[in-house]
Amino acid sequence: MTATLVPPAPDGATTASTKRSGFRLRYVVVALVLLGALGFLVAKGLSSALNFYLPVNQALHQRASLDGHTFNLEGLVEPGTIHATPSGVDFTLTAGGDRVAVHNTGSPPQLFQPDIPVIAVGHFVGGGFASNQILVKHTSSYIAAHPNRVTAPNGTKR
Image (tube, rainbow, N blue to C red; front, side):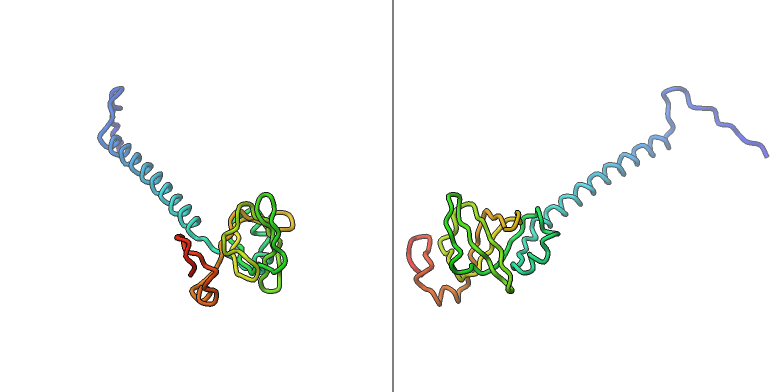
């Protein structure tokens, strides 16, 4: 059996198959980079779109995994615990028999008061919860039960 040797191409010249494989490799690399970028964007978008909230009792039980992460803490404002501060308001949230002290920076919403369910947006710090936003939870049944407490943007009472 004899082997046929193909002479090497002159310097600077490439064969057609080498050119094709180079183009294919470029397309594969570009496609992988684009797929990676798309996957990253989808993952970031979904993680920021999932805006969940946890009741006080569940958040306290998951505290180790939540430390340093911003999330929505839900609970009932405990009567007698609301205290105005120079930077906002301090209060206690309760749920499921557990309670946590909340330090909120910024103005609380107009409907904020004792014995109503709220969501505090923030994270655990030390022995409490640092919040920068309070969301008051109310439904049409709340408006029907307390018609003069809800003020419309035009100033009328509902």
